[in-house]
Image (cartoon, rainbow over all chains, first blue to last red; front, side, top):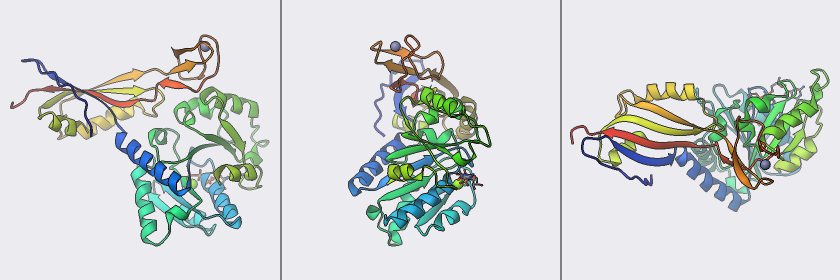
Length: 230
Length: 106
Ligand SMILES: Nc1nc2c(ncn2[C@@H]2O[C@H](COP(=O)(O)OP(=O)(O)OP(=O)(O)O)[C@@H](O)[C@H]2O)c(=O)[nH]1
Ligand SMILES: [Mg+2]
Ligand SMILES: [Zn+2]
């Protein structure tokens, strides 16, 4: 750690170490390195964040399936507190998938992703040969905010069933989104989804961000989504 | 992290740890305080107080051509002219600002 400390020592007085260091500096530095590596290899890395149950696994499974059909080399990493259920669902697409079980940690960190990539390499999967790597983060709208994974695209999902004002309740996270996806749009009518209110809420916390609408069940909106992650 | 800084400065007992946390950093102050109490046990910071400076969000307003502090986190728009802006200049910090040491055994 490079410390720019000005330790002022006064006789009898407590010393104050001026540190002014980013607490997540290590993660930031590793993520920056990984991002440069991904960019050099031409791997698009998508970090998908949402509240629990917003539809990450469903959307990503369909994404892996359709991108594979188009002949793209794709893979996914999924983080969950417990169980490898999501990894099994994602793997049904036929794509390589690795599960990170965080055992209580509520978000993924860059070194966890790095370790999974190393394990893949050891198994003979050339990460640099991938076109798209999808990362399903732990379902949480707070803690993933500050943890950069080296992604080239951070996507925040919100489903039509969880309320139009989600962005206003979690502005920090929504503010880091490169793309917002409104999921389960097939249920919009049933839950009286107010599109204008949702778009206004997103605009308040992340002015100018692109917003897509998808349904992993009917396939609505998937073409634009696939174009964004490919 | 605090331990490494203290060791680098030649040791001592930590009296206080000063953090700067932006309102958009994705950190809950109560949760952080709780975690700090757990983490400091048996460390050089066992007796330390945690001081947190809460940094409000400030954005650059292209219309007013200046940095303005927001009275609340949302909307991310200039409070003077209502222009929406995502150009955040303050409020995402998560920083260890300073460590206060008392001389012990030196
Ligand atoms: N109608 C409808 N249901 C969906 C859609 N996407 C997901 N679901 C359902 O919503 C539930 C949760 O979906 P998941 O994909 O598991 O959500 P998740 O975000 O991965 O959840 P966690 O990993 O637990 O945070 C499941 O019952 C899905 O079948 C959709 O587009 N339309
Ligand atoms: Mg899931
Ligand atoms: Zn203004």
